[in-house]
Length: 622
Image (spheres, rainbow, N blue to C red):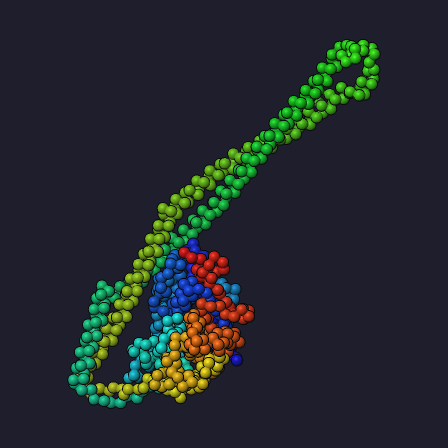
């Protein structure tokens, strides 16, 4: 199966925080499985990816993520092989996009708006849509035929499925929000067919006075509600944009100040670390010197004792030679009877004296050398003690500066940035409400005029996706379910009535959560397979949280879980994905690990929630 011209895949997801180890997970183009116990960060990983893809709501706060500040996602464009980094603060706001060289070095950096804006070609949505192969497009936003620009958030909904949504009874392409029913159906149609719904034809139609009046009253109520929402934020509609501009300017200054203080803190901490290393080296050398001095002083004592002993020997020999000859105290023989020549040979008093003198001279030379070494060692001890005192003073000063100045200043700057981020989020919400209010004002003015004249309105255009146009897509889902050994498969069709799949004559939503999870995964993977095989634009990746949820529950005779297990669905699920049956990048988050014999074909991360292996996304409990 040839690779598509568009699409991208995720290489690395990394969460960073000052002074904390990076929480990083690497992926490959193909099948990736993150498995392990609950509450180890698997679903949080999905939230992080969705957040970098432009979700307005930051990931939920968890204890393990305390102190972490940013998430960085590295992705690769399949068409060109180019890699990019997208960085976003966990507090929200906009993003940084950085193209990378082949060696990972940053080529450039730009700030991109996280929110979709059809008029901003530098926004994140435009960047990801281009990588996915989509030109600027419009989709319907209501049955009347009004349109809105395509956002990457529309596509992300059909690529990332969390554990709650995967078991829902509603169709996988719909969120359940009635207001979004038409755009969600149109985006689904655009992905599967390659083109949105045709533009409706305007038909003139009388707008009666009472109807226009009722519409104006309804719009007035909606205007009042929006004004109340703006007032609840403590803002006036007329000053929102000006305050947001002022806040952005002040925020840029605060960010610059925070970055400068952070860099100063990092530099001081590095200096403290270097000072501590030098201090440890000095103290280690002092211990060595003290040991050498103790040993050499002991050796000097031995030398002194040896010299005294040799001197005694030498003096005793001289004393013996000076003593007058007398009768032998042992045998009483007179001196004349002694053989002096034999005594010289056997006793050698003179030779002993000479040997003792030479040994004394040699020992004194050794002791002189030892004294010179002792002087050098004592001098080095004094020098090292001075260096130790100096380093201790430097370390204490740095610690005091970090504790009393740099840490508080950096923390204060960060708190101010976060406060402004919170205020900015309120202002962005208020700006959205102001834009909504302005739109309602225009609609109210139009409705008022419509009560006095004939207006051109639009006949309702069906929003539902039809069975016939979804037939090729349904065939792709059927092929996937067959490869997964779905029991009692039968024919798969797309129902116009339910806007969902009918599998073997049974509505997909009529099954239990285990089958719903599996068939929802097949639905999302089927879109990827369908687009890939037909050369249609698609981001080229899907992320599925708990598609095999049926295996978490105990089997009972005759249950859906038992039937899926007997059919070998789990093994077939992983095996078909390793064989590229669903091309592109597939990331699966599950509790249970995949079969062991597929280890070399899967990028597999196991979160153990134990002391052995990798504890979880953040490596260890906090």
